[in-house]
Image (tube, rainbow, N blue to C red; front, side):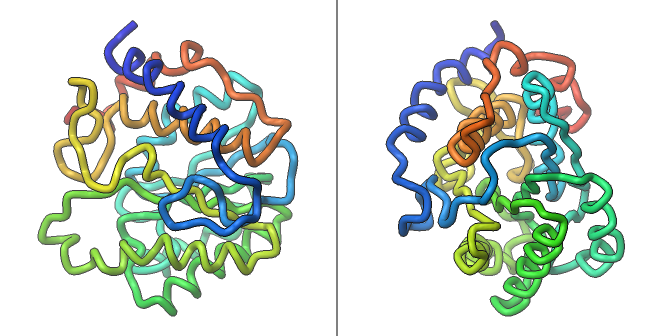
Amino acid sequence: MNNALRALTAALPLVLLIAACSGSPGESVTPSATEPAVAPSGTSVSEVLLLGDSVAVGQSLPLATALQEVGVDFTSLASEGGGNVVGPFSEENWKTLPDEIGSASPDVVIYQLTTYDWGTREEQLDGYGRLLETVAGEGADLVFVTSPPIRPDDFYEPHMGDLERASEVAREVAEGSSGQATVLDATDVWGEEYLQEREGTPDRNPDGIHTCPQGAARFTAWLLVELAELYPGFTTPEPEAWAEGDWMEDHHFSAC
């Protein structure tokens, strides 16, 4: 068992405890809670589509392996340097995104809020609302997932206010979605601030933005539990079945 899997296994009881202590779907929550604002409409999961930026690209690697273990089809449209539905690059993204979502035929679309979700509250509302309308039009549920806290450089510093507002706006969209969208707050995975190491092992990329294999695995373990809470027909795979493998050697983690 390598350090990443050992740390993940040690963290699982806490993840499960968090899930067990969550309130019932639909109750009011604070932004740091793990319970979704509104529970999605389905009871099972057969096809998951992931959207997001390069942070989500890293998350997609263990997630794909884990979902394969339980027979759930998985498609990732997460992309380097973009993947957002509001802010820079979103205009180009929207030219192809609706058709790409339709082609994937998902029943659950996960949008990890990106480091490019810049804009005013109104622009964020429009972008997230458009995504909800697009996903709902395909008969799928939309699950917003908050992104990890970052250590901003000069490129991101001017936009931190927008990024900090994004989860609040996504929750507002979800609360008005009549059960077709929800927000999962990943603070329990990452904490309130960027932390490079956990349990003596790299958890986040030293660039201050991305994740390392351990962090991606911890996120996946948490997300699987959350999906099982939302969809009673979904079974979480054992971490030993997916938390180690070729995905850990992906170039995305080369700086770790």
